[in-house]
Amino acid sequence: MIPPEPPQPQLQPPPPPAPPNHVVTTIENLPAEGSGGVSLSASSRASMRQRIRKVLNREMLISVALGQVLSLLVCGIGLTSKYLAEDFHANTPVFQSFLNYILLFLVYTTTLAVRQGEENLLAILRRRWWKYMILGLIDLEANYLVVKAYQYTTLTSVQLLDCFVIPVVILLSWFFLLIRYKAVHFIGIVVCILGMGCMVGADVLVGRHQGAGENKLVGDLLVLGGATLYGISNVWEESIIRTLSRVEFLGMIGLFGAFFSGIQLAIMEHKELLKVPWDWQIGLLYVGFSACMFGLYSFMPVVIKKTSATSVNLSLLTADLYSLFCGLFLFHYKFSGLYLLSFFTILIGLVLYSSTSTYIAQDPRVYKQFRNPSGPVVDLPSTAQVEPSVTYTSLGQETEEEPHVRVA
Image 1 (tube, rainbow, N blue to C red):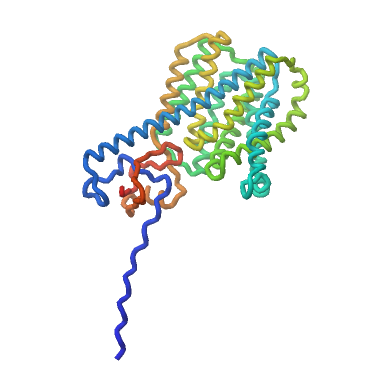
Image 2: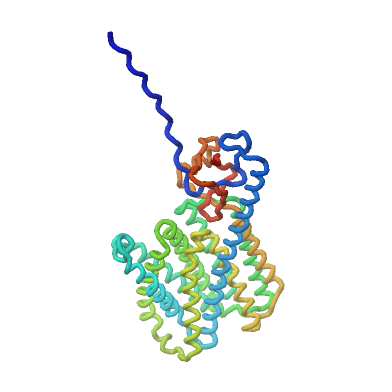
């Protein structure tokens, strides 16, 4: 007689996949009493809502404030350039960029040179040298084209057409970074551009210096070309600092930027450089320009990683207004109430844009849960106390239908 087979052990269903880093507990997905997992009382839910709202407000204000720091640095770059060009007749945009790239090279490229392993300078060059070579050229020529445009077109045209960088960044982020936007983001962008248009209108009304405009079509094309290259550079920068590192990006930009700007300086600008009437004032202006430019390049990856390339370019719209406010005292510009209206309109647009997060469509688990809210419950690890948190980076996930999250 054949003995009966022992009962087969029942297979346990596999545990649910670990939640991605950007799945967060929000007000909408807090567990209610009887909803499974650990029930929370009404007072606990109210306390968690209050804590989350504080995080929301703090992150939103930090995002806006960081963007305004970048705007102030751009304002410093513009003021020093204006003094050099108009008061001392030093038209040396390539040389000014060269100084910045040399500083980046001395700080960040040498840092990569002394590292060991895969993060060493030579190891990076062996794998990705051609990508950084193209990026260095794009970054250099973007700066050069916009500065050069001031010789051909008006200030108003430069201010308006420079906004072309915003749709370029949005489209590139959508197709290459797979970032998805909501209606409130587009509303915020439109409000920011309206504020910029209000500033240009104020310039026209008060008769602010508009520039020569001798060959306006050439100048407008230069601005559009520079804005397009800026957009490509910013989105590429965002991709690098999210997947690789900030130091690698700045080190490679310093290496190839210094190389190509040195060549361009020797070919196109060496005569202009010889005409500069060197003294301590001009030297101080060059130092101030280089410090602001180095600070902008060093700090921008930090802000882009916390927010996004789109948010940064929206924040930089206020740079012209900061320059104008400084010009009221330094260059005796005429004041108009429309300038204040423009400033606050742009800030309102920034707050609207920062009031909710974009999300990424490339993570299949997140995208599936986004489209199927009735999907499986995701258990958060219970090894530590769960702190409710919300992120306002461009990569944070926040949808109208959040995935179910069980609080342990």
